Amino acid sequence: MQFSLERNTSSGLSSVHAFRGQHVRSRSIVNQRQTFQRKNIHCSTVRAAVDVNEDAGQKVSTTSPSDKTIYDMSKTVLGIILGGGAGSRLYPLTKKRAKPAVPLGANYRLIDIPVSNCINSGVNKIYCLTQFNSASLNRHLSQAYNASVGGYTNRGFVEVLAASQTTSSKKWFQGTADAVRQYLWLFDEACRDGVEDFLILSGDHLYRMDYSQFVLAHRQAGADITVAALPCREKEAEAFGLMKIDDTGKIVEFAEKPKGDALKAMQVDTTVLGLSKDQAIEKPYIASMGIYVCKASALQDLLGKHFTEEHDFGSDIIPGAKDMGMHVQAYLYDGYWEDIGTVKAFYDANLALTDTPNPAFSFYDKDAPIYTMSRFLPPSKVINATVEKSIIGDGCTVDSGSKVLHSVVGLRSKIGKDCIIEDSLLMGADYYEQSGECEVFSDCMPIGVGRGTHIKGAIVDKNARIGRFCRIVNVDNVQEAMREEEGYVIRDGVIVITKDATIEDGTVI
Image (cartoon, rainbow, N blue to C red; front, side, top):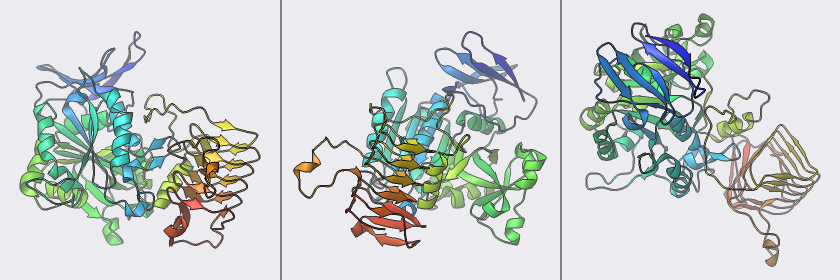
């Protein structure tokens, strides 16, 4: 199958046509609001082309001499985002919120990444499964997306599914696969409405991906399950579940975090998936990203009949499907991808957003934007202050004499006079305090950073009240400390000021 590129002069968009007879490389073609249309589909049908329609956006259809079928991503693909467990590795950021609800990049939350990728790829039926602190996540999703993806003629939605007791199960989610298993009855209803593939995603990864090409490759291969695969170097490979593939990209072996000779044995020729020879030499391993496309009937069979007690996709279900003889395929993704499940990884990923001129991940992409809740905040105000290599979110105030260096400053942040904020992430606040509101109470400290305070190498969670002339710089280079009663925790050398904490004037950390 081969692709040809044409230009539609009336809409200004390119259309991509695929023809039978040549294997399609798993390369992403990003275009905003891509959709597949799919009707009367058979598993053996050859997948094909992309047409541009002014009303429906970009569509991918299959054409063969005997069959004219169209595949609609909005009708045939259900997005399932796994919210994860208690988020202990991200604690204390997950103390009062679910992991996908953790703020990111000044204006966003982690959940905005997979949801935006879905919307940009034409997937508009999305569930997020979680069981811990789901209130803020539910509020964010309902206010940010449901008015946009659903309507009278468009049956899209973005909803949270929390763990709950039923007549058949009274347990919490025991793992990723168990979470999906407990809601199979609901996903079955989606299948009756035309859904044929489940797109299973993680809620704590930072990346930009066109899922329409992922699904298209899955259908072209005739696979039961397709696993997104990340090429990696040897020093990185030990931290991942690795896969071996044959010369068609079919997965033939799995290994969970191998070392030594077992690691060497997992080397593969990654040119099969589309890497150049030089890239393949540099990155001879492929790691699972924890992102899957599963044929709905295959997943229902696996979870409902064959693996009723196994709880994890990566270690139980996917390898088990391969051992049963199911077709498990690899799909190459060689863009930026970061698992930000730890405090240090989260801190580093946020500060990397400030890299110039070309950060590894950027929110400035007009073709595949990252969406979030509209908050209608005023522009930020910098009053005779210095801001270098930093990101300032909406509705912030940086007072005179202050310096913000290599930092990310979140919504509604207030930084007082003569402060120094460097190498830090300030998440901001959930609300504004009116001028003089706090002064009514003698023991009240205003939300924000007080005058003359120096913060370096820290994460300041929302609604924190930091007094004047504090030094939050990890003066003793402590790597781990649990001082929640004092308003902070240190993880991997990063100071985290907890949500709603109060740090008194003159405090040194």
